[in-house]
Length: 553
Image (cartoon, rainbow, N blue to C red; front, side):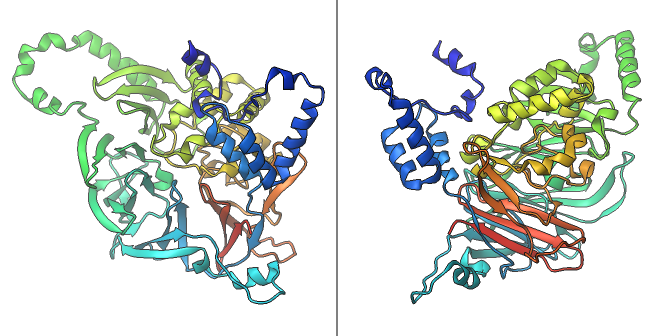
C-alpha cells in the first residue's frame, strides 16, 4: 500500500522533485499563532543567506527519499554570478563535462586528437590590501587556473577524423566512447543515405587515456551527430547501421572489451540463418505462415510503407530486454516528422517478439509519453546526477509548461505527432546541472516570446528535449540539451522560483563590447554537473573563438 501511494505522486520517481518537504513540527508548536510567520522568516532568510540555509538544514530533516533534492536547494545561494571574459585557453573544440564532473573532454581542431582535462577550483593568493574583484579577474584569465591537462591521445589518421559531436561516458568504469570515420564517399544502398568506408568506435579509459578496445564497421553509415545512431544503457551498447538496416548490440565488459551480443536485422536470433539454410525447414513447414496470409500481410505492409519513399530506422533502449524502434524517413529528422508517416514498435530482444505497435498519431503512446517520460530516458542507474534532470513527468513546473503547449496547439492530433516526433530519445544529450532544475530556477521569458510558432517541436519549454537544430535554426538561447545555439548580445537571466522577480545570476557570451554586433554568432554552454562553473563558447565567422568562464567567487 505504501508503494502504491508513492507511485501515484508525479514526483515519486525522483524523491519528491519540484515540491517542498514539510517541516516536522509538534501539534503544540503548530497551533501557535506566531509559528507560520517564524517559518516564513526562515524561508526568506534561507533564500538569500547561505548561513541561514545551513542552520535550516540542521533543524529541519528532509522527507524520506528527498535528501538530494533538499541539498540541491543550496544552489539557490551558490550561483556562477561572476564572469571572466575571453580567457586564454587552448584552441580546442570543447565537447562536454562527464556526468560525474571528473573530466572535461575536448577535440583538437584538426580532429585527430582527444584532449582530456580535470576540473579544479580557482586557487589564487594576493599580497597587499588592495585586492578587488577586477584585479582577481585580470590575473585569473588562464585556462590552466581552472583545468589540469591530463593527457592527449591520437585516435585519427590521415584519412580518419574524430566525430567531435559524438561522445558517450560509462560512469561506473570511467570509460569514454569516441568515434572516428572517413569522409562520406558515395550514395549508399538506400536512397538518400551516404556510405562511409570505415567507422571505428574507440573505448578509452579516461583515467589514463589507454585505448581498451576498438570496433569497426566498413562500407556502412551510422548517424553519429549528437549520438543519434548509438544508445548506451548501463553496459549495453546499441549501434544502428542505417545502410544495412541492422541493430548491433554490444556489451562493455569490466575488462574494457567490446563484446558482440547479437545483431537484429535480417535475422533476429543467432541461429536463424543456419535454420533457414538447412533442410529442417521443410519438415517444419507448418510453423510458417500460410501463403495467402503472407500475401495479405505483405500487401498491408507495402501499402503503408509505399507512402514513405525512404524507409529507415531509429532505435533506443527502454531496458535491458526491450528496444523502442521507430520506422520513418532516412532524412534523419530534417523534415518535420508530423508530415510523414512513422511507426513505433516495442521489441523484446530475448523473445524476438513485437510486444506493442503504434502509429505516430497514437493517443495511447502519447499518454505514456506524458505520464512516464522519464522511462524513455533509460538513464544509467550509476549516474546519480543524471537521475535529477527535470521533465514533465517528475516536475510540476515542466508539466505546467507542457499543458500550456497543449492548450496552444491548433489541433490535438497534430500536437501528438510533434511530441512523438522527439522519440526515440537521444542518449546523454542533457546536462544534469542543478541550474537547469525547474524547481529551483526559470529562465528569462523574453527568450521564448519569438518562438511560439516553434514551441511544439519540443517536449517542454524548459529544455526543448531532443529538439533538432535543423528544424529551428537553434533559435532558443539556452537549455539543458547539448546543442549549438544562436548567440545574443543580451545576457541570459536565471531567475529564482521562490523569488519570481529576482534574477539570481546572468550568463553573457562573447566580449562585452557595449555595442550591437550584427554578425552571425553561435554559442554553446558547458555546465559542470554540480559545481557553480559554466563555460560559454562563442564562435563568429572568421573571428577567433571567445571562451568565458562563469563561476562563484
